[in-house]
Image (cartoon, rainbow, N blue to C red; front, top):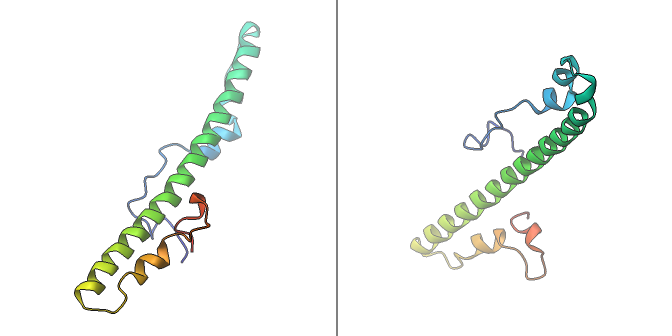
Length: 110
């Protein structure tokens, strides 16, 4: 399944324009005195690193929310299957839960 913003309406959206910030155009237009040039340049580099980390963490959040939603759906399906008298209602959970040898980073990624 392809995940797009339309598929995940409850996914939190970033409220900042990462591309604009990382391009540095706003910083380049600023007039900076000679005494502040080095500290401001260092600050801009740090801000760009922080923005990249925010972007990475947001991507991880989206992935983990999808895993959580899939696990919740599997739980509901297993409960429904049990109520319907299916012979193996836990099969829905086994499809989503990791194998014994999987690392936690692979959970929910079947």
